[in-house]
Structures are given as structure tokens and as C-alpha cells.
Amino acid sequence: MESPIITFNNTCISYTKGVMAVKNVSADIARNTITAIMGPSGCGKSTLLRAVNLMHNLYDNIHVSGQILFNGQDILKMEPIEVRKQIGMVFQRPTPFATMSIYDNVLAGYQLNGIKLSKAEKDETVERCLRSVALWEEVKDVLTKKGTFLSGGQQQRLCIARALALKPEVLLMDEPTSALDPIATQRIEELLVELQKEVTILMVTHNMGQAKRISSNSLFMYLGELVEQGSTVQLFDNPKDERTKAYLTGKMG
Amino acid sequence: MEKGLKKRLFTNKLTTCLIVVLSALTAVPLFAILGQVFYKGIDQFSWSFFTETTPSVYRVMKAVEAGSPIPGGIANGIVGTVIMLFMSMVVAIPAGILGGAFLAENRKTTMAKVISYLTDLLQGTPSVIIGIVVYLWVVVPTKTYSAVAGSVALCIMMLPLIIRSTEETLKILPASLKESGLALGASRATVMFKIQLPAAFGGIFTGVLLAVSRVIGETAPLLFTALGCSLMRYTIDQPISAVPLLIWEFFNDPFLQEFIWGASLFLLFFVLTLNVLSKQIAKKWKVQS
Ligand SMILES: Nc1ncnc2c1ncn2[C@@H]1O[C@H](COP(=O)(O)OP(=O)(O)O)[C@@H](O)[C@H]1O
Ligand SMILES: [Mg+2]
Image (tube, rainbow over all chains, first blue to last red; front, side):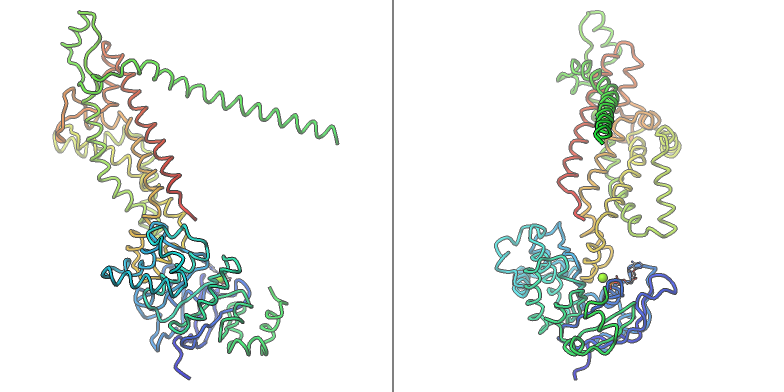
């Protein structure tokens, strides 16, 4: 097997001293796959995900220990800015930048980092990214309009395009379809299946059907602990842990 | 059952009546003041009132002797007010926005707590005290009353309002907006200037307009700093007039008392316009959260 792109090594995260929201998580995330993080709400899924692009560095009270290796290097010792350019993130609710046009939203990563592109490069990037999220045909005539005029599903795809523009190796997604209707959700699922060829996707989901449909591997968390991990098929068909079994059969919130 | 319902309906009606009567009562002084100023001031409005300067004693005397209307106007005050407002805004807007951004981003640091406390203190400081302090800081060392000194006083009065409105608007932006900027690898400063502040534009702009309308009618801080001047002046290192200073002067001059109303109405119109404008902008640029 190819070396994992991300490895959690005894990762612990606490919001308040002495209270662990994530306890001793160790796991490997395989390259160019979709890995789902599942578990009842409040079990630490978002907390674990946000550690990967050092979002926790923004808040003084949050303490992260252990190791998170990215291509063999410990993320926790790297510069947040460098990490975040290689590891993109998509949030639960779409967050298009309201003051920017659709075109500028896609290029926001370059603009915010002061990277100058020629007009041709810009046009090429915008078209490529919008095509890869299947949004190009819908918005190609309104690129100068504000991104906030789009529907929720379109906005979320715009946010994925914005993250993809920087050509990240990993894309973190925190319940990216929980605010969307079933049709928009389905489109995004189809999109993610395509995208895993270019980018490794680590996705939090509370939707078991979604995990089953699109992920190849799954992590199951419970009360801050990683209870079970493995291929999604195996985890669903033959869960080893009682807690996983209870959750998957709907006996647990 | 039937009885209880009737009673409830009655109480309901009574409460509604009470609310209507009470709100009408509060409106009385409001309309009385506005009516008074409008009624007396509108007669003063004429081309010369806005283009001519305060009349000299000699001109007033001649007009009184001849029985003709008092000549002159408030142009020197308007120009002074505009100059001082402009100079104070040039400093207060960027400084206030930076201060507000600092407070919103570093809530828990000692520095932020101190600044926040000082902001509250400044906001509650009577304007006359600000005038005296600026007198000591600027007028005494430079040995002259000036537009600069007046601007410093107005600037100090505007600062807390701009700081607070910036801070409050930034605070209600969703955290995910800032986080999605940072998630793209941008620095905190870049995200602040290119994402958070633009998103907060409406609230900040409203705050600036309210700050301006707050200081535009201030007399006390200008009495100790700009002093006033009956000539038209465009210089910033000499005493200068302002509309509220003129109102004070008119009040003290028995021949010019009619002018109080014209000048007051002018100020009222100005403040009213600013308020309407800020409401419109707040509506148009409403923060989506
Ligand atoms: N900002 C925060 N401050 C303090 N505690 C938090 C914060 N965010 C989450 N928590 C706590 O950490 C635990 C895990 O939360 P989270 O990772 O958001 O769960 P999930 O995403 O699985 O629903 C919960 O017990 C939650 O109460
Ligand atoms: Mg969550």
C-alpha cells in the first residue's frame, strides 16, 4: 500500500485544560480516497478535522498534542499559512465572500496570498475550477455577479472550487451537505467521487448513507475516542465494536 | 370562560390605548422642538444666509438704523465646520477602524481590555472636558486657537463611536467567514483587511455617519479650541468659526438672535440627512450572518 498522506499519532485535543475533546486518536488516511469521519454529535469529529489545517491555532484556549503527519512531516510544527495552502477546507454552511464576484471568489486564494496571475491564467483557473465542480455551465455568463446570489448548493460548489483553485493535496470537509437539499447533496456527492482522483478528501458526515455511498474508508468516533477504523464496506457490514454496531443500527443518537 | 375572555380583551384594549397615549406624549416635545426650529428658521433661509459671513457690528447698526433686515449669514461657520470635520475624520476613521479591529480580534488581551475601558470612558466624558484638555494640549503649546485644535477635539469625540461600531459589526460576522479566509492560507491581517472589514462596511459606515452627526453640533469643545472668527477663513493655524459656535455668538448678540434659528435649522437638516443616509446604508449593506 502507498504511504498514507496523513497520519494521526496519539492526537489529543482539549478546549479546556484537563477535558479532552479528542483522545489519543491514531489513524492513517490513504491518498486519493474519500475518508468519512462518523459518530454521534459532540463526539469530536469537527475538532479532529480542524486540527489538520491548524484552525485551532487561532484560539488560545485550544491545546493540541501528539503528532499529525502530512507526507511524513509533523503539521503541528509547520507554519499554519503553508499548511493551509496545501490542505483546503470547506465548511458546513457555504461561505462565499459576499463582497467579491463569483470570478474573484474562485481566485480568492491567490488574491489573499498576494500571488499575481496574468489575465489568461486567471481565466484558465476560474474555468478549470468551476468545471471541476460542475458549476461552469450554470454561471459562465454571470461571473461578475456576487457569489451570494447563487443557490445554497451552488454556493457550496463555489466554495469547493475556491478551495481547489490552490491545488491542495487534501480537502477537509465538515458536513458539507448538511445545509443542502437532497438534489444539491447528490450533485456534490457525485462531484466528490470524481474529485478524489486529484485530491484526498477527509469528510465529517453525520449521514451514514452518504458515508456508505461515497467513502472508501471510515473512522468511527465516540466520546472523543476513535473506536473503529477501516474500509467503509467492512465497517458497515461487519463492525467489530459494539458502539459502532449500535450507532450504525440506529440505537444511538 | 366567556367572562374571562371579555376581561382579557378589555385589558388588551386598555394596554393598547395606554401605549398609544404614552407614545404620543413622548412625541410632543419632539415635534415642539422641530416645529419651533423649522417655523422660525425657514424664514432665515436665503442665498445670502449661506454665502455671506457674520455681519460686523457696523453693518448691523446701519441696517438697524435703516430699518432693513439684518445682513450677512453663516458661510464662515459652514466652511469652518467642514474643514474641521474633514480633518478630524481623516484621522478618526482609520484610527477608529484599526482600534475596533484590534478589539474584535484580541478580546482577551490586557491591552484590549485597557483600550476597551478607555473607549467607554472617552464616550462618557463630557465634551467640555475634552475641550479643556485639548486646550491644554494644543492651544497652550501652539499659543493660538486654531482649526487644528478644534479638529483634535472633534476627533477625540468621534473615536470611541467609530471604534465601537467597527468592533460590534466585526463581532457579528460569522466566524466561518474569517476562518474560510484563513483556510486559504491568508494571514490574519490580510483576512481582516480584504474580507472582514469589507464585509463590515455597512456597519462601519453607519458608525462614521452617526459619529459625525454626534459632533457636528458640539459647541463646548470648540469654544476652547477653535474659538470662532467672523471672517471667512480657509487656514488651519488660526481661530476659525463653526456653525454651533455661531449659534452661541448669535445668542449673545441681541441684534443677531434671529439668526439662531436659521443656523439651527441648517444643523438639523444636516443631521437628519446623515441619519436617513445611515439608515439606508445599514439596510443596503446588512451583514448576512
Ligand atoms: N469552541 C469550543 N469550546 C469549547 N468546547 C467545544 C468547542 N467546540 C466544541 N467543543 C466541545 O468539544 C466536543 C466535540 O465537539 P465537536 O468536535 O464539535 O463535535 P462533532 O463535530 O462531532 O459534533 C463537544 O463536547 C463540544 O461540546
Ligand atoms: Mg461538528
